Image 1 (cartoon, rainbow, N blue to C red):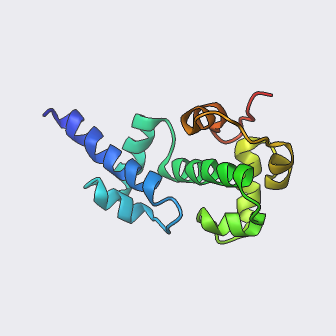
Image 2: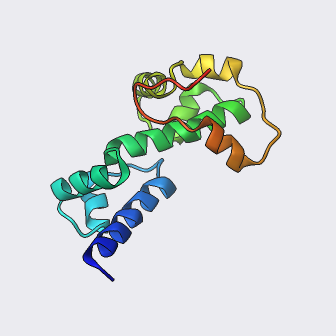
Image 3: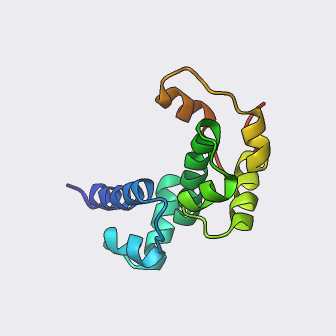
Length: 136
């Protein structure tokens, strides 16, 4: 295995941890240790490899899950914010709006249950990045 392949596998291991444990408190030191890198090197190589920082990836993953919960449950926005790993409703709402272009309540009001496989819903509704509102 080449050094680049080894580095990519270690980065994927850290990203998979974020994807699985998105609701847990994860810090850069923990994620860097999973990838066997220093925190600064981990942030640089993660961004170069995946096109976003580890923090942005984790927040986007949390918002993706929140979108599914808002669409498919009657739980309050506050409860959903806590379930996806946000300790503050204000931070959750601000991040949600930055990623999706609407507040959680606005999203829920216009969201419709979709009778298609979950993989299609995820691909269709996946927020791309901060500051970019989804197409309407």
